[in-house]
Image (cartoon, rainbow, N blue to C red; front, top):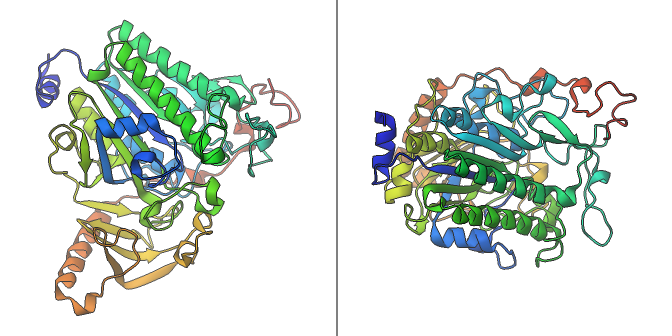
Length: 496
């Protein structure tokens, strides 16, 4: 056993030749108030609730962007999206760019320690020429899923198990129907959405069983389509929840999580597996009851208010993580360095924004994270950071609403860009809803807080080198995934 692996084993209090396994679930457009264990009265999430009861539930866990692609890039690389070039906005089926191949993902880090790796679900980090940016090019041995978001194709192929036989919603019409890919091959186009979740569940179960049989440590990454709009649910979940289509979609995700955990238990590796659940960004409140719930947090998707970027998060590892709740500051950025530490793997030789939270998870220690930076979904060098959280205080230098959060009575969720000098300052422990800016002029102690935040801001922005935007590389309709590449006319002929 080499030194890194020995150190990883010592962290867990036991020297073992078997490094831990990792199952990482990343929900889509899920609000802080959407889970039963976070207080929603009508959500049906029994498996997540059991995870929370038997694991560590976070109250102050953040993604890095209130939009899909940049948030996923940060999760997998431990770096803010501005460094990797995954900005502004998101990738589309015809996008030329993707997550740069010279970026190091969690999967690539774990591969150096002999891990088997698999991804299932929504990738949304680019497709590119001949599948250049697919998961199997980014450290994953296996992939089953959709290379982008399930609404980035005509909605009429979303046949769901509801009385009217259709999903509700408006999707992209002038592109190919959504494909299902296995590794880098299209196996189905269009997808049968009523069967999709079972396919993912079966894939995850078989991957776990195969890895255990080979006595190989494993990493399963499940970026779910649920609960992104338009929601869908298969026969086992449709109509079972009290929340309608959104609740059914959430329940189907919960069912898959329960099946994965049961598979870990049946195969004797539950006590050697860290299961981590979180989400990519806040809810799309403009869709009202079909868009999710931010709970007590302000606004939602598309904004740098808490509702856009503070996520429900649960760490579950029986025998290693003591049940409870933590109010320590943590982020999706911290998963790569944490997984690397636990696996005894070396960190990539790049500027990492994540910190190791092993001590927080295993010993309920203090978080190494003291600050969180907030970029808008369309960041640029001119405006820089929109907000910073330091300790319990959050300073907004800019605020901007977004159409995805624009249906709430709070006009701040839809208002245009506003510059604040001095910045709006909130005490998030006393005012988690960001409703009551502190009166800085009447409190000298807060002047010191703002000076500290200003110093942190200047230091961070001095370290920030914006990577070349991968999304601004543009689009090429010829790159849209098609199971019949030479057929005509496209996109109508891409059915198989």
